[in-house]
Image 1 (cartoon, rainbow, N blue to C red):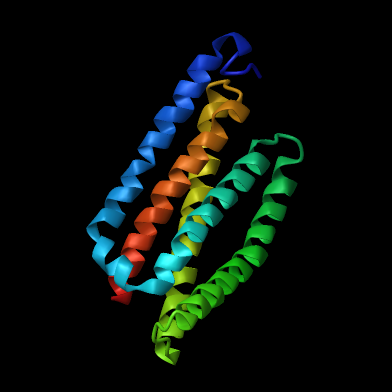
Image 2: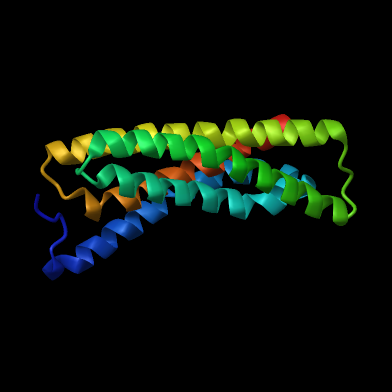
Length: 178
């Protein structure tokens, strides 16, 4: 496969990354609609940067593994297994940490809040990671058919989609929590 961005056209690669990053602003529009609610709901406000980072990290890992053509089927199965094992640990740890910090900041944390917040966090993150996996898988297929080196484009595309999905998902999550 040939590289989509040869070294002589590095400016085009930078432009592509900038354009894709700008598309990530769409997710911020969803947050704009619930900004007052997010500020009032301290646990999600505490968790939001980490949640967005987790979504981006899962996108990068997924794109990197799906981009490798060697042992593709075996790697995909191992990737799905790793996501299935690591995602609940990430969600539970982040839920407990953000609720703990909110509690220490005198935010009222009761049993029902813990259940609702943790449940919605799991649903949101599984939805984001699942949709991201499918989108990355399909994008890889399209780029491969176009004879494009997916190493040059798949990770920036994956991170953009992860950001939009994560921020939109969190906007929906806050709607159900408040």
